[in-house]
Length: 371
Image (cartoon, rainbow, N blue to C red):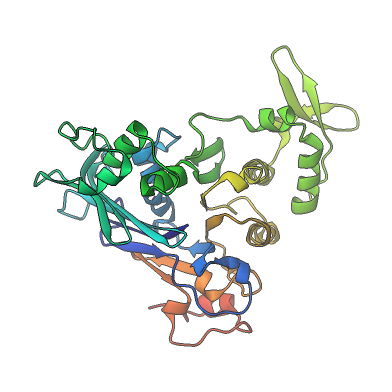
């Protein structure tokens, strides 16, 4: 699991901001929000332009750094990569992972998306490797335990991650910290619903077409039931063939209409959730950005409840909807507020002891959690 992530000097985050999953409290309700003492479900609230999407891009920069999986164009943008109000040339990223009893810390710094200036990996406070391209310092002694004695690091210049180089060039056992990080990162998933389709980062190395997946896996009736049971949408779906392919259609009394032509934004968003939820058991870490942008508030609540109660993957939602801040859905330690480059839980934003009976939304609207 991911224990914590921090980033500094990246896009709108000039100062260090940390998403700390270890700050769970001893609440005796909605315990599925926590796994092994680490927050397993989190909802981040924030006003427009507070940085919710940029936080997702920052967290998933590791996907860009270590894999060839799908990335977002905004992650690759050199102009906006470094915070515009800082005179520092580097953005800094830090990931802490928990793998059983082991703690793995991976850190790096960059001057632009594809140029590393520093990189290190530590296992339980022991250095596996450390590269500093400014000073020329290279500590690779710890790599001797991981089949890397024959590798040459003289040509490593920051255009290629050391972790990626070693993991791809040598056999790594399941207990290797490099194997763990590479496997975890390869299965991370960020997605959001946009008017023009399915925007996602990670997990796949090419675009996937959702209707083709539903049709190809004989899931049309299952998807129809999902729309009804989760979204309250009564729609008869079927499959027809045109000159090029099979397509998903909505069957009406006198004609059929291609599903893509007739679905609302909310139905499209539900289809994305259905599609990705079929793969949630393969995902290591899930980030759904503005997941409820096209949802009625009741549907947004159902989606969160469904994910909290039946999905094991560590997940982060972002939203503007204060109605989701409710002790019947999650817990005070799982609700975070992003404002002015700072990320704090409701628990850490007030001196009051928060209890299950408290109306968290009312308190939020009344300014209880304002600094």
